[in-house]
Amino acid sequence: MAEKKRKLEFNIIKDDPTMGHKGYGVGSLSLENITPVLLDAEAGEAWIEEQAMHARSKTERGVKYVKDRNEFPEDGAKKYWVIWVAVDIKEEGPYYAGIGACELLINRPARRGFKSMPEHVNHMDKAMKGMVIVDHMDAKSRKVLADFLKDHDKGMWERSSAELKESFEK
Image 1: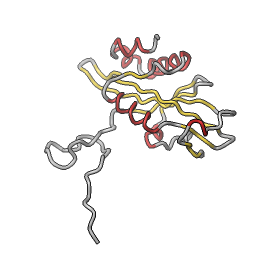
Image 2: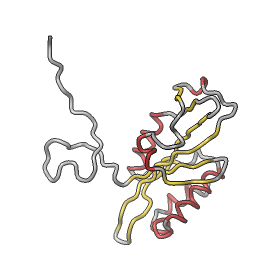
Image 3: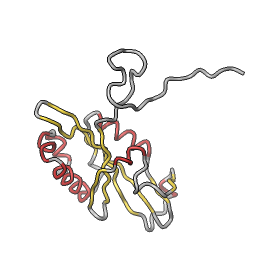
Image 4: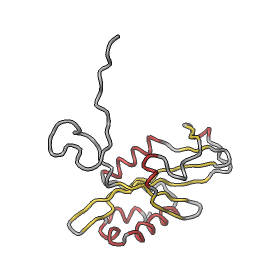
């Protein structure tokens, strides 16, 4: 029986993955500066939900996810947003560097949910690269998110780029 060649897989680890050397761990991703925020679109509430990093938030648990949105039972569904907020530090202090919002639909009575995993991964990646993706959110949800970010740390909001702030005014 032929032995399978082991591949270097995508690793998610904390801090400097290479510890200064250029060997194993190069290309690893640190998620130390990204935080998942959940937003209940109906209730107009936002909160930090660390367990959402691994799709284990209280909101996400207890449902079976369908891969095709057409299979999702819309009747009785509730809309949430999972928002990936990346922070960075400049001389003046920390600031919101990037944001990627992703839709999450939960139908508790039917015990079904829908989210696009490729969208979540891509928006998290783009947030980490300093992009802001909130234009597909409804105006109410964008306002709730902006207010949450301002209230959470006004200084971080003020140090954030004009582009980031303007994204919430559209």
